[in-house]
Structure formats: structure tokens, C-alpha cells
Length: 118
Picture 1 (cartoon, helix red, strand yellow):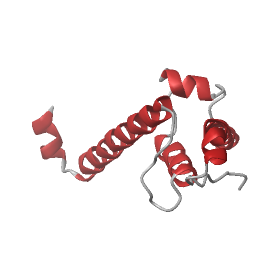
Picture 2: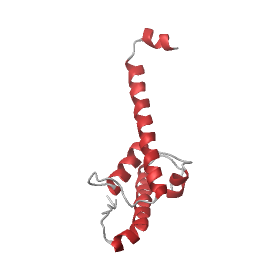
Picture 3: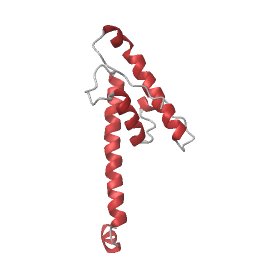
Picture 4: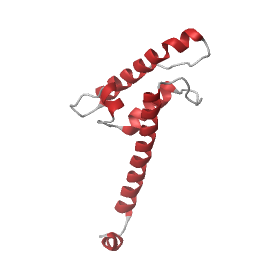
């Protein structure tokens, strides 16, 4: 799919290039999302870092989670801004899932139950 995977090893040479590799993963994730997005606004790594634009939490979280942590290992060696971003995305994803759960219950609720909450 064109998505890169990072292998965090203990090699000094690899550790020096990790920030560049992480940047490539984020850029690739943005491009991948943009190709599949219905939104005309451009998603960039800078917009993600600033937190001013958060789109498609499930898709983006899945891409980044798989690419940066493919074997379920604890992320290490990531720059703080990326670690913070991934943490924020996980919180946003949880909020999104909670909202979807609530919407499902409202749709399945009877008319009288819905009126009780209004």
C-alpha cells in the first residue's frame, strides 16, 4: 500500500535516522489519507502536529499505529511531538468510538426513551 514500517533497533546508525523515518511515515500517512478523503482541505504533518486539523481518527490512527509499532512493541525513540500526537489521537479515537456507541443507542431507542432525554 505504500506505507512504510519502521524497525526500531539498538543500532546507533538507525537511531540517528529515526526522526527522518518517522517524518516519512507521517507524510505517507497524510498522503494515503488524502487520496481516500472526500475533504478538499489538504492534510499535512504540520497540521497534525499543531492539532488544528484532526480528520479520520480511525484511519489515521490505524495507519500510524501499524506503521510505527507493527509488532505491538512499546514505542521508543520517537520524538516527543510524535509521541504526544499519537497519545492525542488515541484519546480522540476513544471519544469517537464513545460517540458512535451513543449514536447507536439513540437510533435503537424507542421514541418514548428518546423523549425522556429531550
